[in-house]
Amino acid sequence: MKKKIAFGTSLLDKGLAGSGIDGIGHYCQELLHQFSEHKQEIELVPYSFGVKTSLSNAQILGEYSSQLRSLIGSGLNPASEHFFQEVDLVHSTDQLIPILRNKPLVATVMDTIPLSHPAFIRFRSRFLKPYVWKKLTQRADHLITISDFSKNQIVNLMDYPAEKITSIPLGVDGRYFQKISEEKIKKTLKHFQIDKPFFLFIGSLQPRKNLLRLLQAHASLPSDFAKEFPLVIVGKIAWDDGQILRAINEGIGNKRCIWVHYVNDDQKRSLLQACFGMSFVSLHEGFGLPILEAFASEAPVITSNCTSMPEVAGDCALLVDPLSLESIRNALLKLIEDRSIVSELRVNGLQRAKQFTWSRVSEQTKNVYELFI
Image (tube, rainbow, N blue to C red; front, side, top):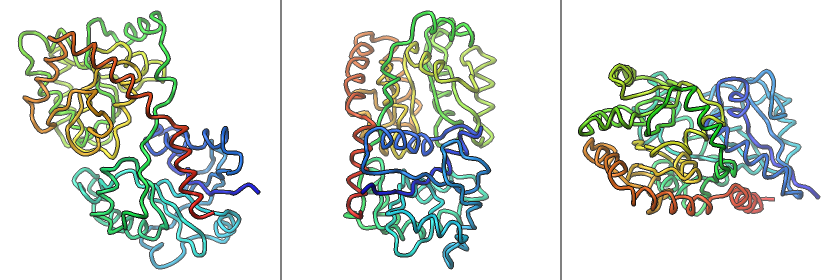
C-alpha cells in the first residue's frame, strides 16, 4: 500500500508566485519531481501555508499562525488537522513547522544561520524567530540536513541528538551539464553588454554573501586586470548594510563591474559556461549549491575555506580566507595568470559535480521516511 508523506511547499509556492525560488524552494521542487518519477511506493502530498493559489498543486492550509502562539497550542484549524490525519508522516521543509500529535515529523534544517549568526538576519526577525524556530525544530522525530558541517552546528546550537540527524548533500540538476550553443552564449553576452573575459558572482545581495570584500579584492588587482576581467554580478538585493550598493555603483562607474539584476535559466547557464571563473566567497553556507552548478558548467571556482564550502568543493576549487582581501585577490590573480590551473579546475570540478545527484538525495530521503512508516 502506497504511503503518503505530507510535504511542506510553502516557500516553493511563494517563489513560484513571483518572488523567485530560493534554496528551500529548489530543494522541494527537485524532491517532488524525483518521488513522482521513481518512488511509486511513496507519494509526496504537498501542503502550503499562507498562499492563495498553489502552482505545486499543494493543499492550501491557510495562514500559518504565529510561531510563538504555536508553541502553546496547535495553531492548526480543523481543516489542517484533518489533512495531517490522512497522511503517514509529515516532512516540514522550512520554519513553518506544524505542531502535531501522534504523527511522525521529519524536518529539514539546511543551516543554523539564525542561531549562529543573527547579524546576518534582518533586524526585525533577528531574535524572537530563531528562538521559536529552535523550539519548534526540537519537536521533530528526525532531522535532515545538507552537510556534515550543518549537522555539527545543529547538535551544538539546537541541543538535538546527533543520532537523530541525517546529512544528505544536495544534488546538481542535470541541465547544468548540458552544453549551451555558442550562438546562445553570444546572444546572452551581447544582451548584457559583456565583451571581455569576466569573473562571475551569482547570489542574493546581502552581507553574508561577502560581495563587498569580493568587490574590494577585485578592485585591488594589479595593472588594469580589474577592467580587463570585470566582475559580473547576478542577483537581486536581499538587504543592504549600506555599503554593498555603494561599492557596486563605484565598480560600475569605474568599468570594473556589470550588475545583472535578473537572468532566466538559459542566461544563467550561459554565463556560467562563458565565465573565466566563478567567485563564491560567502562567509557562511549550509551547503553551497552554486559551487556544484559552476563545476557542472566547467567553470573554475574560487570559494571560501570555512563552514560547508570545503566539504562541497573538495580539492577542486581555489579555497580562500573570505575575510582576507589579499587571499581573494591572489586567487583571482592566479586564474588570470596560470592557465594550467584553470584547465585542471575545469576537469576536476566537472568530475566532482557528477557525484552529486538528486536521485541519490531522494533515495536517502526515502530511507529516512522508512524509519517511521
